[in-house]
Length: 486
Image 1 (cartoon, rainbow, N blue to C red):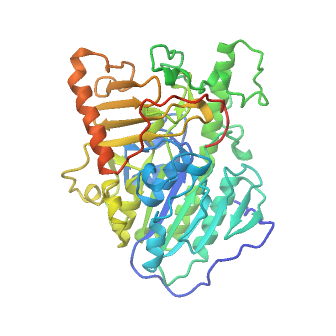
Image 2: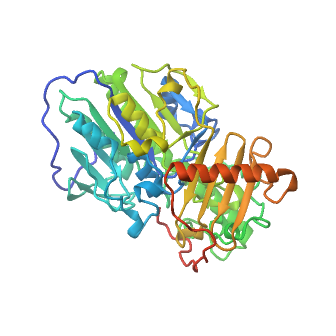
Image 3: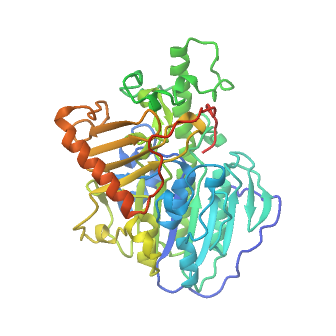
């Protein structure tokens, strides 16, 4: 692939020194809005991702992996700190709550203090400036799909080319120019498959001539759902993104819905093809440079995404399509290849804890109730693993008008508490109803389970020092309809 040329000079790449020591290197890779099954290794029959599959085959794939706050910036803050979003402070995608609390500690900063060379490349999407990195080159805000501007160690540089190819180039350049006498820890965050789903030119015609099947509940209305869910603006039929790509805004709504869905899914998948290709370039570099054996690669998405369930797109809700994420880990020098863990619930909160554990650094004491290292799972010693976890989303009003909510999920059950007026609950028996069609919150036969899960929710809040009170507040008018942030 031809290298994209920078229209400026990148500073801050260190000189090449002598060979690294044997502490594990780390590459953390994250996409934006890639849900758990948007990979062929997860059973997707349309989207083929050979390099994500390559990672999974060489390590472990977690099928029960979740984002505890299904919103871009809060999830990114959780990845860096190992904390729930209410603790690190980035609870929304904009405004005052788009900044870290002053006492937040990033795992790369701890690694840097311990002698690692640390780098951040790609989408940052938090108002606070990156810190704890020897080198950083990030997109401002959401960034552009084509000819993106990036901020490299404080200076702006414009690149020619497709954004995830540019990010791939910068990742490879960072690896090539790292100091060779230190282990390295690099974060590489791609832009895709974030809205508005502009694929690289070489993938613009992928999936032409095929019709992607609609999900079984594509035409199921939101009638009977809580008022806050019915008031969301997340319907595929209403998205304006494809009026410039062949969809007539004056078509009947159902016809427009079907056309929007096809264009949406195809372009969503097309952008992921670009990520997979660049992931392959990074893996090839590790193989060629003899680094693969001693490098831990973690791959995930920042949140899930609705791909037509209940006719919806976007995230921000506690339903399964929104909270489940891909989660892959490969570390040939320390883990067994070819594992699929379908049993244990792992969280984006755990990433910092796992990386800290394997690289010999310690997160702050308060983080220990927020996440766990996966080492016991990877080494086959998983006794006493978590049985539940806390969900939160506090962005309202905002894009898509998703309601504020907290919740608790266990292996078999889920309770969602919608916090603002009208205060409502949803209770789902996931073992019997994985698609979450039947709300059991008002069923007398399940009153004991409802009260049990309410108790679990409050226990988790106490353990993680969640003292924010939102219960019963009046919801403000929501005017952020169909915006494209986060």
